[in-house]
Amino acid sequence: MFEKPKFPSKEEIEEMLKATEITEDLIQEGEDLMRQLAALKIEYEHFKLKRKSIGNNEQN
Image (cartoon, rainbow, N blue to C red):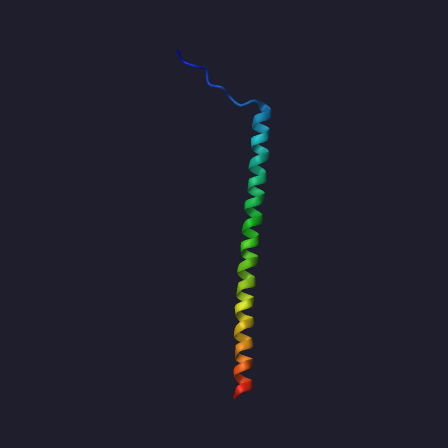
């Protein structure tokens, strides 16, 4: 009446662990890229403000 639960084999567990490690690495890489993108956005906004300021100074 009751079925015996099927536990994953050693190979299946190793495969799941590898997949988990790869996923964690990809998440870390994604977080690193998001930080780099945020830094680039800040640099770009600073550049735009600096350029606008120089343009305003030349007009005066």
